[in-house]
Length: 637
Image (cartoon, rainbow, N blue to C red; front, side, top):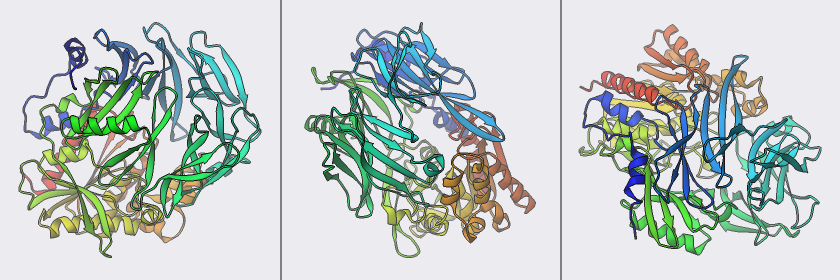
């Protein structure tokens, strides 16, 4: 049975968010798609009576608000973050009285952007807001500790118990002499698994971690596994992510027949190992937890769309039922739960639905609608994302997704190939605001999961998208050839658009085939592999970046900034100058190289913005400019 929560609550949540007026000009459409998510994160209180959500503030920044879902009260803003150099990205309920909120601070030091994290204790009435950070403290939450109003946090010396009301701190676990990397509890305040780097940070940068475990009720540490990361970024060895205290097991991932699979290893001393879930085609890449004790209930993987396998029979039945009951058969995710797990916070979305949050009551079997993620797109016709495969030049079938403009014939269209970032990532079926914007503007959009993408096993991953750039970029260009050969795209109206590694691909694709595209749009791109290594040389990750990029002819040959003379099509780039993922010097270097070679290039810089350009104003400006640039370059009225 499905119903809305009381109208007062829904009206309060949507107050001040007007539906978009019908408009067809590019700037108006760009404003709708460029608007940041109205809800960036949501959490449910332990009692299930309140929800908190992080949204974009009226003048920018982020706001954390609380709503009483029982009485349908108006949202109350509890915490505001207005600094241009900080991002409030997550708030979780420690108790019904207190929340923990995480803030990233971005600062430029010695020519590089560094990100520091801070954790705030916030009372649910907004009257008590304090930084949790203690002396030599990293303060990431690891467990609720089993005591109401207390949490366990990681510090530079070990694990501390923190009383949220008094801020009193008590050391409960001292680190051994080796440097600790991660810790895992049983969800009830008991530390069961720990990893160490061995002899120092240099070993950590080289990618070796040693995992240790404790038997139930004991203090002695035993060896569990060793995890290594290759020079190409591939991980091997059992990597534990969670503990099931009832069955005394550690859940984690390891390689199985060339792909990532889910395993359990017993923590009783026998270290009995079993495969829980594996696929012959794709990696198992996510664990599913639920409730305050982070109970392990399933895992998921992405084929043509993301699919979940639940170990819990009740959730398996509920998840399947909700996907059938909700309009459009969306993918349903369990986001949070009350302490007794009788109330579940859900997210549901699809390719043509940006998604909404819901509250499900297991005792009454009622589903209440809370808040849509992108209300600015209400009423906007969105285009279905169709899974496809196309042949690469060597005959390998490459998976991807095709999005065609709503109501189009699907033939002879202006088209965009849009490679994903990473490169160790992949595109998935679901709402994609960038692809949907260009489809709304009349472009066909293809998103290839080129070789070098994650999720398809080690053989597909190759040596990573930089060392194996010829294969990866070749697959991207073959997506373009397929669009043209199928009659979907007009060969004279082809463009390429990408972000991060996708921006790199949008540039390097011209190096590989200068005649294929009429325009390239690159957002926060890597442009010079040697410069990427140099920029990391003063950081702790320098060894890792050096190994990941490698040495040899591919470094220069795979750097678009060093091959600017090959470009024929005009280039438009966008970059935030507070980007700690890819420094803005990469785009500036590319722009200078193209200008020196007499090529057409424009670089738009956004002051104070990070890699994802988290600003509705900036994203709207970017979409407006990119649309106008592409239409001019492709001769579209």
